[in-house]
Length: 349
Image 1 (tube, rainbow, N blue to C red):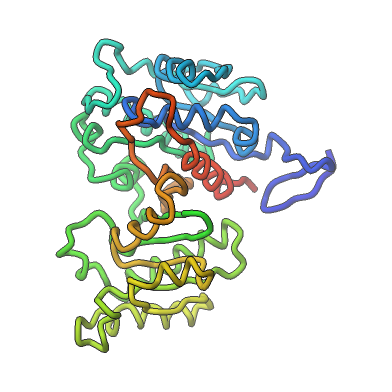
Image 2 (image 1 turned 60 degrees about the vertical axis):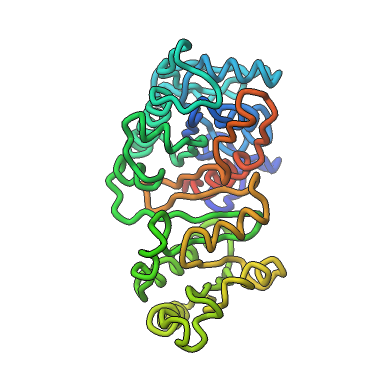
């Protein structure tokens, strides 16, 4: 069929994306006792979201069927044993059923080690498929880190787990909320260790990383703002010298590479300036410096991305929300955002 190519995808004369060119995305249902399965089911219940990719859900069919019934959603599933068996039929969604959750030990809104183990097993299947070229991206349903840890996956967070499974040495995370992209230079470490992680090399790496991913997504020349580490931007060294020794040199080097980046700006005003349209992206120095601002913008929208892995990966910006689990009232907005962004970053060709 004749058509035009845009961003690596083939569009027909009617303006519809050709099915065979859609990215293949593995979607794990996450921790079954939280809202992960519900957000996955609700997201895939709409034709608009299904048109973003060729989805392969990985989970337990009992949980998926039960939550779909609770939500009053009629979805046709093609039950398979492995991602290799996916058929990508328009009228069905492929579901890899691991049968790894026992009804006798399952309960919503509870931390159950066996269920945490099951959530880790879904991810292992997804990443195996990614490393074997079966899928082009991974979307992780919301996890419960305590249950995951008690289930035998002794990692601080998803990024460390994904790095271990895939053997990736330099993974990093970034967040997208609305039109604003954010990345922390240091992430899940103790507060007293943050300053040691702020070097010219680490700041430059994260500036160039988010610039590259934003350009991959479609930004022509993203405007990147870099936050200071110290109060008032260090006040010329009065409150700390990381701005002088690490952050400013990294910004200058990034500019020499052709990146549109500015700063360092005091952290207490940088999100206000971004919200006023001055920047497209913020490079922060630590986890909470970035995530407090992101979550004030909207905790139930946006996505957390994991990069530096074999394929693009994302998860929701919120947690397992035990207060809403199993009730059919969870919002799928963040999962929808995640599927959209990961699908675009995973475009084939």
